[in-house]
Image (cartoon, rainbow, N blue to C red; front, side, top):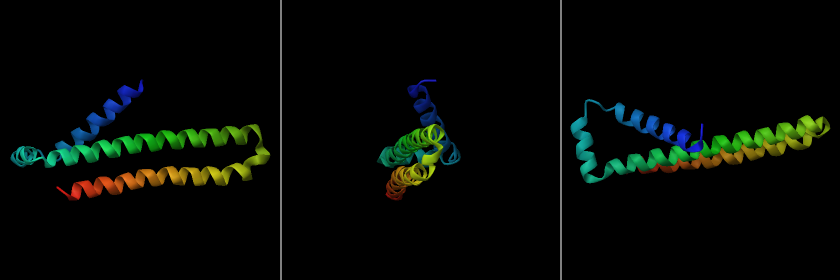
Length: 109
């Protein structure tokens, strides 16, 4: 499955879930679309989807590289493990910052 297919699937599922919650308020959705607040929700969904996908792929690559290094040289576990945990924590902070930005965007609605 290519990157375009994965991104499209995440986008469709995320936006579908966001709009499926409010099936009774179709008139509110139309009113929100007319004054532009719907675009805030779409921007927040795009931001979180991209940050989550990027963070997950970066963390998986970092952990895979660390485990490969430990497998090749088991004596270096103590020297590899702590920097790997720090790297994963720094990657996760980017995702958390994007969550804060997305929630700030949604509060403008």
